[in-house]
Image (cartoon, rainbow, N blue to C red; front, side):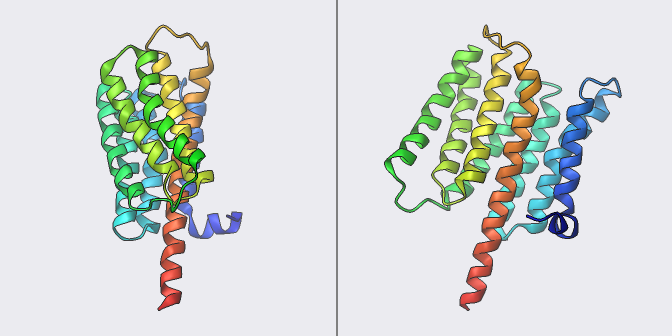
Length: 220
């Protein structure tokens, strides 16, 4: 992805990156809670706009819904963790539906093992870190999203790793609820890991859908 292509064809990505970096740098700045919430939500919200603009058909719509719900969750979580979690939960279900439409052909045993590990251990870690069964239930959707991404035909180096980064970011959030003290690490890492994960998922899925569309067009 060249700089020229970003400027000419992907303004939503540049705007999203700018918003995400600005939020990270200003998150402790007293510029006003509402402004910070809007800035935070715009990072992934602009990724949703990118998915809508560049996406393809129903699959692009599912990705857009997932990212839009993520942006909504980013805003709501600043008000109440439960409200934000509900938005993310719904988003995970939407993107799981997308990933299941693109299963990886003949995954290796290690790939299957990684998928099962993400599916089972994510909710377990959510519960151990938070002590909340409600968060463990959310973790089941989170782990399902990551497992489905890992076992999909989308690039593991983008979509798969992006989903894992999302999981790690959420685990850091839940570590702040329970008895585990990780010092300043959660505050420093939650947003960069989360945003990078969403960014990788967005560009990985969109580019795969566009490549598939181009391949289909050439075959006609």
